[in-house]
Amino acid sequence: MASMKEIALGLTTILPLPATPDPLCVDLWNEAPSECARLVRLVIAECHDAQISLILVRVPLEVWAELSLDAESLVQSPETRIECDSGLRERLEFWRSEPS
Image 1: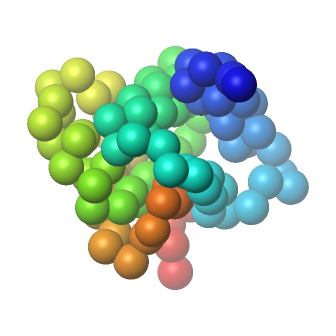
Image 2 (image 1 turned 30 degrees about the vertical axis):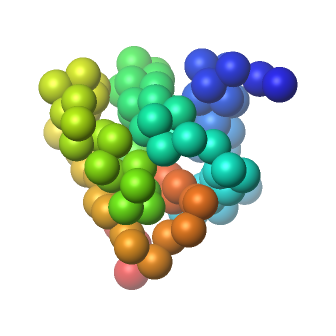
């Protein structure tokens, strides 16, 4: 199985492609919230480093709780925000443009 770093690099590779859906949804398949939070941090950092536009990341409540435990380690660029969406179940959403 791929590591979270490899998954983040893969997501960062496909995010800028024109055929990639917006949002790009990632199903979590029983991953621990701490690992999902780690994936979010890695994707944001990789997008920031590669100068890939990432407007919004929506996460379920459990992942939001993990992210808020260690907010200082979260690399954020000014154009990326993270929102909690209580309707999401075991899914992350990565948005390149503003949701309508």
